[in-house]
Length: 167
Image (cartoon, rainbow, N blue to C red; front, side, top):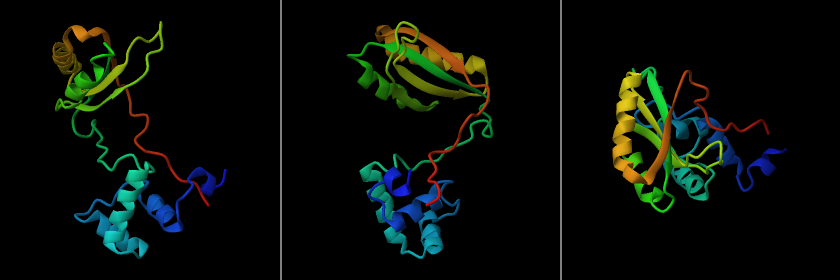
């Protein structure tokens, strides 16, 4: 598939910007200015283009992707919950706001093998801490949670987003 078919509506400058950022933003105090220098653009143009790409959904978010293991969090568990559909939006917002949850999202159930619809990644120094934090989530969810489990991480599988190919 051609790059234009893979990413319709991107002009050549957008493509250069995406390629320059797909491995991450420069780790400097003014990353957009550094990108602008590298691409021969004004810093404001880099920021404006990023905002437009976010608004169009080409970029989903601009965020740090920490290596939790390097930060000392060696016990990471994806907590999975079967939460009442009528209450999941409000409760999911509250779970996602907890300081030890890095991401929280809704996924479709796949009955009968997979009854879970709410996922929340919990980070801690020990597995016991993950279990304790899952208990805190259980308390927050109350009777809206019908089932749950914890899937502990054993290794990092992926820490990158999609990559644009050659033209």
